[in-house]
Length: 458
Ligand code: ADP
Ligand code: F6P
Image (cartoon, rainbow, N blue to C red; front, side, top):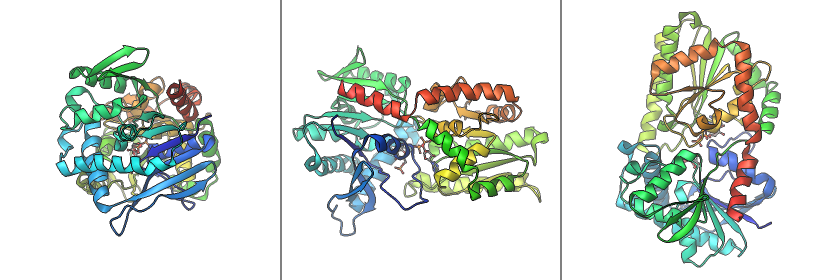
């Protein structure tokens, strides 16, 4: 078997116990790579002090060797905050209004990709399989090809891919499309993203789908496919079962008493629909007096990308909104919303999912959303909770037979779904949960990884 070399911007390098990596890429890939082993190269998360990127630092954990590099402050500013998170992220999440096109940032993005290619080069052997992840590193294969590397190189996009009308508002869309066409296999989360990608190729006569999962662009043939990322379903279910005895989970259970728990877990990101969700919860309580004082909504939201102005602003908006809802609805003995603005460890998270009667997952747009899958896997089969899920999450395409699908922009509709979830008879809850769980047991993260790598190797 060829050695696997993974490259991603964010790398969950070994950390002291207790810390948790928030973000689907880190959580899922780590699970997939732990079994198979290989090299994982990426950004250390630090800016170098002397404004020089510094050497690669190598650390081993189990079968994985992490190869991390610092970036300069300018690199982080332009490539990560500037282009990746103020252009590609909003565009791929259909937020044209939030994209900020700075020439400096665009140049920084391509420069850092070249830098990553040069850092990676000395580690590579001719038969290594290279798997690049996410929007930060789209031009990486083109850079490696230019340096003469002939390895198989695959790319997986963890976030949605937009339609041509949205993508083509971005000044460097052509370079980005060419960047993707330099891979041997380009993977998306859903068939919907894949269709959008084919539409983008067609729009400017750059290429098209030619059948059998193959595409052409500028005379080159490459493969494309939909591979929904997933979780370690069986292991997470087991983990959640045991998490009930964790003292923090027990304390949470006692503090909730006999109230119903609704849980939301997301990075603090405008794509996650957190403000609309708080509005929907408020509407639900107002519309359903019978549930007043009988329900607690717990929102766990670690800070994310706080140097990007839209995220910094959101930090204030969500905190204020949670305070306002509590002020408006709360009573001397009832705090309707509990808002936690940091990460929690995975055992606690798993235990809290299991305690919750409703998993409220309502992104405005999301590549997949692993929280939805974790919530399902964590349930007690005898008394499972209900997943209320946005139709705009990739996960909705897989879990629609069991979840209550909502349009997160429709506040009244989401409020109604909350009422339906909390009032759902046990038999219906079990049936719905079983359908989702069967799907997730079959389509776990190992299968996702194998499917992608088999297609890349084929
Ligand atoms: P994204 O990749 O956009 O952050 P996902 O829902 O796909 O969204 O993945 C988020 C991952 O991060 C999940 O595995 C989730 O458990 C984890 N996570 C999110 N918020 C927290 C939190 N507050 N504490 C711990 N883990 C978190
Ligand atoms: O899963 C989508 C994603 O953008 C990953 O690429 C990223 O690691 C994660 O969300 C968290 O974001 P960040 O790495 O910017 O903290």
